[in-house]
Image (cartoon, rainbow, N blue to C red; front, side):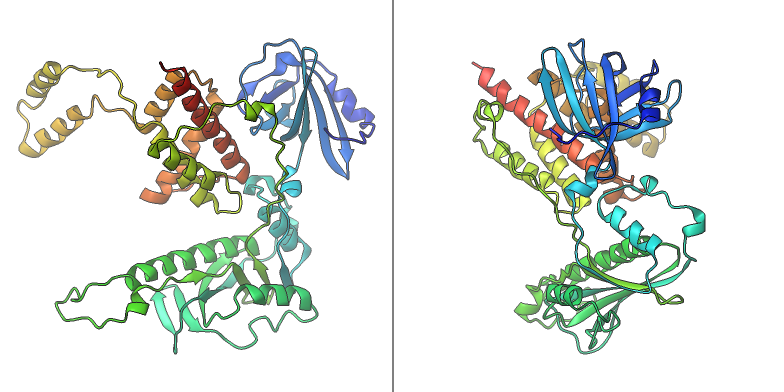
Length: 453
């Protein structure tokens, strides 16, 4: 638990001791159990100690966000994440830290040229995992929107002249002195240069009418990544005949090539000249896990192949060094394995489906009939999320509406990536919460197998 407690601000404390403030952990309302909350500063950052009494307490997840709300409104007094919890008689005492991202994620090497403080602050807080809506800088601090160039060195390929990958991305031979503009920052420049040493090409794109360098970087790097992914698809085609029927030349090393996008991005405002080069990876300050008797007393891991594959996918989902999109895909791979055996009681018997089909297609065109028959054939199907929660019920796993919601949000994020559409803004905290829910499901499945005769 946190040491060196400081005396809370008297005015702030007096507000919290007014009645009827609302306390939520995720979507679970624990207001009736919140008997005391003390807010204070530690290392100049807001912190709180929240005491819950009068259990049994409702199900919530320690990885969910905590919000203390003003009476009768959704305006927060305090918000944060739980860093520790301890039991004391019938009480549960929670340490809540308002900006745990700064504790859990470090700052990677970067070099700056003509970058103002607002851009630098935005880069650091966004890099630490804060969502856009938590980065609040006044309009008077916002730089002028402009055209940005975004460049990323590319490893394991060689080109002699510029290549156009798509209308917005070009692959160029690596220029001399890529980081020459960042004078007087020798240590950072050396660290960054080491990350793309040996690269003979650099991918370049432009992002227009953007205010913040972080936004230009995010959009530009995403565009470059997609272009390089497509280039890899083109490279790995080993067909001997082209689509036009002519024979194709071949060199095995070309087809077995694997382009690697370096972790360094160079962002430059074409009008202002503001520029940075930085390592896109934010180092995770992982804690040292204490394997207490709760974990040691857990059931043995199932050894069947499907379970092993789900645990391997879960490991990728839990790896905070990986991009959010990769972790979300791994979450759903693990969940597909988890719910693979679910067979729900059909809502319609076969004779009922036949009768329904016969009545429904009467008077329809052939195309309409095919569509109706397809829809009827799906009536006994259940979605993957339905199967997941049905399996959780069979395994006796307690899940809250917040648990279901965070899993649904990761599904929406994944579907938008796969099928197109607006991608929801998921934070590392959201993904860590979802990983905790998946952990609970996999553990419940293992316990359920132990109970089976």
